[in-house]
Amino acid sequence: MTDRLTIATWNINSVRLRLPIVEKLILDHAPDVICLQETKCADGNFPLSAFRKLGYEHIAIKGQKGYHGVATISRRPFLDEERIDYCTKGDSRHLSTGIPFAGDRFTLQNFYVPAGGDEPDPEINDKFAHKLAFLDEMADRFASISGNAMVVGDLNVAPYEHDVWSHKQLLKIVSHTPIECEKLEAVRTAAGLTDVMRAFVPLEEKLYTWWSYRAKDWSAADKGRRLDHVWANPALAGQAVSMQVLRDARGWEQPSDHAPVLVRLEA
DNA sequence: ATGGTCGCTAAGCGA
Image 1 (spheres, rainbow, N blue to C red):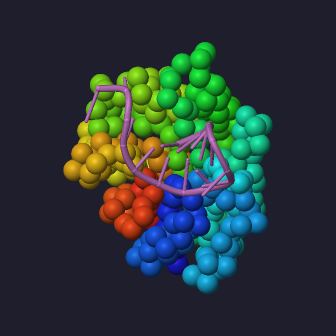
Image 2 (image 1 turned 90 degrees about the vertical axis):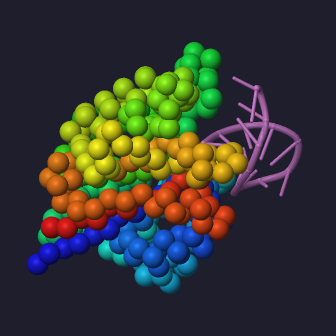
């Protein structure tokens, strides 16, 4: 009996404002599990009933008022839930859920890594220091990951040359500095995880998930970055049969500055 | 060209 599961990850920059386009994602692509970041919504204000009406009865949230916030919305029941307060700042940036799949299970970790501010120097920029510490803590914790695992979310680092529109022009821009790229790679390899998006798109090809609101014409300029990621242990990654970045969603009505990423599993 | 645009929550912060 073949099991199939489609997972979406999307930084939606306010779940309440973006409900109409999350609904469009659901109607167009019918993901089984949706991982959202930057929900910007206290738990008591999360639009649970809107998602339940669309058939997503299992909703794990970790929100805070005004900033950050992650949510995992599912048609399948969760086997367990865990929330880790990385850097013990009280930020809502991590949510882990156990997902039943193909007679087995995997742990789906939904992350919103700190953006890190503008100045790429931890000595003078606390936000950048926080980002680096967050990545170091991820690497520490990931060293003991076991079982089937998938990591998704806005990791706020575009690690490879063709994850940005201009490698040379972005080397000193937060999200593509060498130290961040090295640390992100250390996180992924600490757990032995595969970069699922890059398994479908060769390293020589451009791959973006985010385009700034500030561009006059984001699509024409196409100065994108791949800030969103999907990683999995090799066995689970081997069950991924498709991956797509829904670039069109960046042009939907009142869009997020991130596009959703969809991965389909079959086993 | 050191700007530009968003969303929160009510002037400034974070992205």
